[in-house]
Image (tube, rainbow, N blue to C red):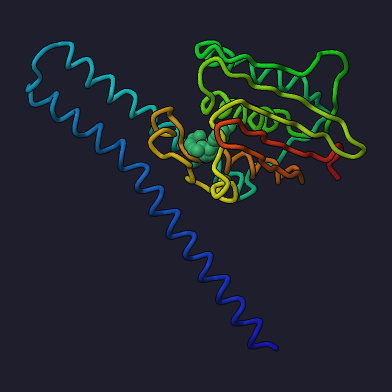
Amino acid sequence: RGAIIVLHDITDIRRLEKMRSEFVANVSHELKTPITSVKGFAETLLSGDVPDEATAKQFLQIIYDDSERLNRLITDLLELSKIEKQAMPLEITKVDMKTVIKNSTRTISKFAHDKNITLHLPEDSSPVYVEADKDRLGQIVLNLVANAVNYTSDNGHIYIDVEERSSKVVLNVRDTGMGIPEESLDRLFERFYRVDKARSRHSGGTGLGLAIVKHLVESHEGEIYVKSTEGVGSTFTVELPKTQE
Ligand code: ADP
């Protein structure tokens, strides 16, 4: 019996080591892409081999955008590692989900407006309280709604609602976007998993948003799942216990 337990542990350790080395490979690749671009365009500018000012400006813009991308990537990686190490204790207070939704969507409404996407927020009537870390809850909502805007084409709709059940609070973020292929649904919350790498990069995605959301939800003893139909849209659902023990 002892031998079986030992074997089981070794398999676990191997699995963890494999995951870790895959993660390091992924991170290196993600960092390398923008760095290569920054270096290349800076070299060209330094060589003085640029035909005109407009081209020079275009190259500088690429350098700027890729630096921003590196910045986002590192911010997300640090955030993820802090959550995973549990180096960031939650500050639990009684918060109104509707207020959190209102604040988080404020920052996104400009992007939605640019794409003529309508954000449908929950009715203002009565508050829905949950015991949670207000900032972390805000980040959960922000990441989900930002994705909904990102992966929905112009003139679409995003519906955000909260429901109160006996012992939990349920948040739904539904979009009329491109949807997610069934075979990707299981992997969506993995670090760096993207359905369409080029599209995610193009829109500035780091591939870490949903991994962060899942960790944050789980640190609140909650659950997250997704239902989606390609070409119709996706619904992300977060269930949080009303009280944290
Ligand atoms: P990213 O930075 O690429 O958006 P995320 O971790 O937030 O990373 O999401 C992972 C992938 O899940 C995305 O690249 C995209 O393919 C898919 N995805 C996330 N949200 C949606 C959505 N609302 N509609 C369609 N696809 C989505």
